[in-house]
Length: 291
Length: 311
Image 1 (tube, rainbow over the protein chains, first blue to last red):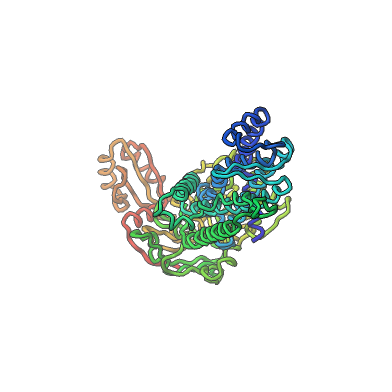
Image 2: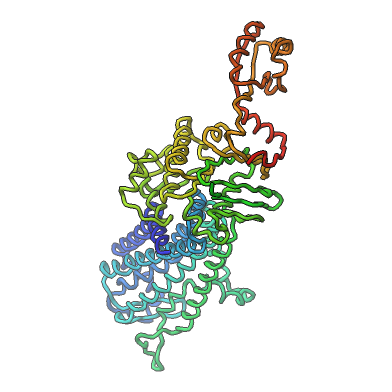
């Protein structure tokens, strides 16, 4: 099993397509960092204009932590596409190249092959998230420094003490990794059914867009299914940045306002991963390879 | 001689299409087993079932004395295959492809062994070049190198000469003969090109519409004393009249492709040529055709189902 995992990783990281995602993330983050470095004050003034009269913020608002949050909000919507680019190609790409029949005539079971491929896709996804974390958090801290994290939510503001932020990002990135692995599992499942990569990539994105719309629509009839849609939970990383307040309205350092939501989301996402991968194995083991 | 492959009543049904219909055959150790049939006859489907790429609807496959359904891993570790096109990873070099598939076949050869393998298929000088820069013939040779890298007992080549130029076809033919004669390998080679199979196979199976038409020894199927000759003349009506009035009357066969067809001993061809000149028949072409080819066309076009005429 370890041999095929090594081979799958070798194949992924020898393909030029793999580095498109890393390059795209670097370019996007670089441009945002460059823009904010040049004209960050205008941006923070724009953010603050609604609350300018009601409170006064001191210190370095436009710090690495805030910039990382801004970038996560922007990029985690697009990262699924970059994940799908590889995950949805894992089987369909082999079928398209004609290498699938050669792979399957080797002395490994289809289940072993699929699990190795999914593991490799997961490693790619995690590396993409590590790369994102490095550029968005570490490099932003290096350029912009650290400070308290000031976040404007839809109906309230959150102010996190500088010392209380880094661990939240660690949790948020871990959660985002799980969310992206769920996307990878969906793309992987869809790749079983196609002999070209474009179909599963487009299908993965279409499903995400479709269910995201269902998840965000405020129509009562959809409320029954919302908790079970994985798209409802993709953004639960934001829960790490909501803090509990004491009776005296002081922020409780190290607390999360609603940890149960995170646990529920983790549970739903893991269920989806197991479901998609299990279904992939079931379908693939029955499939005649005609490509 | 030890039986290495035993296929019994193999059937594959795709919805309303029966691609393979109750096919039974056996391959002995050391055979170059020619698997013949027109395009769509069911050759590739049968081979894919032997490689577990397609699940049979019915029937049983035994290889090396083990049931394929139960001993897939042990069996496949001793088989090397090229299935239709030699599709390999185009973004990797020949060396990397070979190494990768060697590992997948359960071996970890040294660099020298890999280079020796590339040398055997004539690609050592392109070892580090990406496969996307290779010609079809080079890809085919690399595909065969990959199939052989783990020194398998049984080699399955599905249409190995597809898309190759005459030199490429000759190279593959020589390689198969080398594998059979020097390395004592058992080779199953499928093709719709009879001329290819005829030159290399020791045993032949002909299938059509998924059914076995005939299975037997190639030298018995190919009887050199029964050559078919096709004649094209300036005036076929006149030529036919002359032949009917000559000693060649009994050799005449039903015409085909607007040609006069005769069945005769190969040694009689020069005599026929002289006689035609004496009859003042203006000859445009005289095309000898092998009897096996004729037999193949006859039985596949008539869809006659001939059971084991010989074993």
